[in-house]
Image (tube, rainbow, N blue to C red; front, side, top):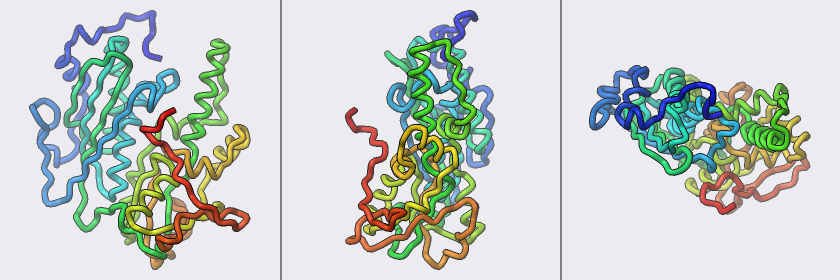
Length: 349
């Protein structure tokens, strides 16, 4: 995955830190008028005008967040940007700039870093975002990527996690669980490869699942779509750790409870078939899988007619009083308590 042993590769030591920075940033073009100075000085210069500035950072570490045995470096660069842009869109904002810092070991030649940054560049071009800075350093083992995204929003448009009110509708964009199942497919094929390196996997039936895992798309379209529909969510969060975990964040910070319905959870047909194949419960996958990067939000019940029937959204439940807790209503009409069982970065394996 990292290198073709039959071709000559360029050691990073040959370029040095500043030579590497100049090399990997030379093709990035400024796309936003708010970017006054991008890469090339002691600091970037941004014009925030009179809007609120949104800032978010995520750290991705090899062996913890990704596995290079099946994650192409170009996809990794793209995904590292998406993870951060998703947080800006979850605040109902517009992402405009990113910084990227990497630490790499000497096992990575220049060509590998070029591949990583080609994914970052593709993400910037696709989402109209400027690379304005970052840092590079050496690592004793593997690769580490830290991305900071900077966005903006009108003060009255910013949406927080703590605004959900009783009777609000709970809405989610897209579908759930595909990224988790894509990971299961890739991990299975990795184990098969260890036993039989000559085996050629047939992944045609898992295309959507693998794409959702390796090359997710942040929902840049949702803030604009909601504005067109004249809807301002009362709370919003992106689904990175799993639906149940994100519901806990909203309910805890809003001091409310919730009730969601099993038969309302949006599942792609590939998710359903893969769950049968892996003998997994599709509801648990939707609740706890994570890495969907869809948006979960609440809206006043008065907006029901605007939301219902829209192909981008599913109404999955409603907000209740805090003392009623967080509950899932099963297809058999039984209420069970929701548990936050999503990704926990600090959990011991």
